[in-house]
Length: 145
Image (cartoon, rainbow, N blue to C red; front, side, top):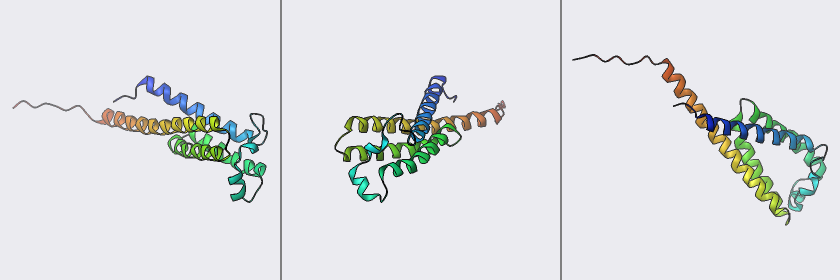
């Protein structure tokens, strides 16, 4: 069972796209070039977390960068699962603002893409194990009776 080239190219596209997006979004939590990230913090989250929105973004940034780096390196599967859960959490936060429903939908879609990446990574790893095993197994010899 060889991992299909078309599926492999989809895996790479998801891996690079989601990994870079997480790294860049995490980095931008310090520069606010892509967005003013603090405005997306729900008032509910603001009451639960005992720090300001900007400080919260400065704490979230490195976490997002680590998740992105995990996806881009050998921890793709774990990083993708973490990203999927993280994005659903972000979507919930956005919905509780009473605004940004469009961004919440986008984040749920990205969470689905992260889940697909994690699943494809599992399938890809299984295919590699099967390929290695079949390459190491000598062909059967048939003995005539």
